[in-house]
Length: 302
Image (cartoon, rainbow, N blue to C red; front, side, top):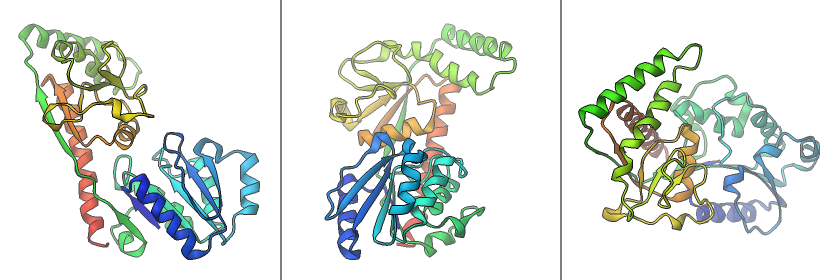
């Protein structure tokens, strides 16, 4: 089965019920390091971190130990869009040893619904090998999705003519010096560049998140140094906004991880209104629309 959007408590309840219902003798949990669960089950349990899945010391032993008396839980292991990733392929070998498989992910995909095929591969690699996503699969498999309520808005700050001209000069300089570098470095660098226009608008009574620590303020967290162990340190701001985004994360996964761990569901983006900020704002809105559309589709088959 695949379960998307469950809380840790809901995962615990499902795993415990599954073990009791099917007389499971041992649970193997494959998990990503930021999301190690702590399941209480009526049998033996072993945890294998994502980066260890490919290790020889685990591989051959697990192939020998896992059988139909075992449950394999895959917890938040959607870490790359490459379906042929070695770690995924090793996980498939473990999953093929038993008919008892539970796949947990908070979001249904990294970028778009084609990523869901990675989760379907965990269920049945041979069945879905080489296939693209089809809505029919939602009816064929035991997939349930819990929709995630979400609020997002952009707040624009005023930019003067001098700043707008400085922005254009910076953009031209970045393109002029691009050479053989990835063209995506231009918007990445511009997004950081316009952050200096936002600094005067950072209020001490609100919580912010940014791509790096250049703001050097105690109420501005980063995606890398965010206090994962104690998300309550990020206080809820006025108007119910959990956090204000100064820069979007460079990688979608970093932003998704932040949303998973923090529990923040009311966000605001502080935008200069300049093209690069508009681009990142639209990218996020489009991504969330894809997530919402998938939730709506999946709900028809539950």
